[in-house]
Amino acid sequence: MTVSLSGREHPLSRASEQLRVLNNSTASHLRFEESLARSGLYPLTATGIETLQINVGKLCNQTCHHCHVDAGPDRKEIMTRETAELCIEALARTTIPKLDITGGAPELNPNFRWLVSEARRRQRHVMDRCNLSVLLLPSQDDLAEFLAENRVEIIASLPYFVAERTDAQRGEGAFDKSIEALRRLNQLGYGQEGSGLTLNLVYNPTGAFLPPPQAEVESDFKRELGERYGIVFNSLFVITNMPISRFLEFLLRTGNYDRYMQRLAQAYNPGAAAGVMCRTTLSVGWDGALYDCDFNQMLALPLANGAPAHIRDFTLGPLVSRHITTGQHCYGCTAGSGSSCGGATV
Image: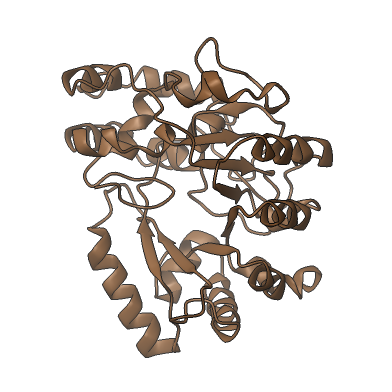
């Protein structure tokens, strides 16, 4: 199998092909729904909506090897102003407290700052999932200051506190750019005690294995980044690599797919399953389509029957207690201590 990471011509670029691979695994483990049933959690249902997470597009200034969005500089999918306005209208009609903006590099969407301003005007907590290097682009020279002025929580991906491991996943020079961006954020007050400006980091493994305990990784990052570079941050989130998109291709290319899926399934944790983020999150695609989570979005798995399919048809009632669409990839969020956009769940 030939695989290109350009996002243009690889055989797993279509969501249907990814689902075919996931549903035809030769690994000897239960279907995810069977694991849920044994835990008394099937069908998995939402318990409300605490976070509206919107993916504003796949355009990114980086091309990371394990990106589940398959984002990059050549991607054209981008949320329009019309769709962004529908997201804000939906937010305004509810008491959903959090707006989580992701991408790609969400800041490269021309409507990003408008979204932030409109959500903050409505007194919602805004989170920006930032790759750090975007803060150094000439076109984003004042971005860090804008985020600070609007009290935006920054959730920044940093594969490791060593340059070689970070650059191996994100490209040469990515680590040095990340450190420069983190220092800029610290100078503005991000991560500093009492500032009210939250800076959280995200760690995910570089290979086909489960992440170590979140508390251990956070302790290591705080010590090493502090001692080596004088950098401080609030918390670190550990996220398991999901078997979709570029990471799925990596697993297949290296012959690790069945072994990795077996590892995830064997580590299934009912407590983690009970706390998965899809139960309290609604995901909006760049085109306005609605999903249970960002991962289902990348696999084009729609909401269950009866729920609105698009943000233009947003109605809170059928969404807050909807049945969650699940699949084999969901083992990634329910293995071990669990994994979510906010890190471990148990």
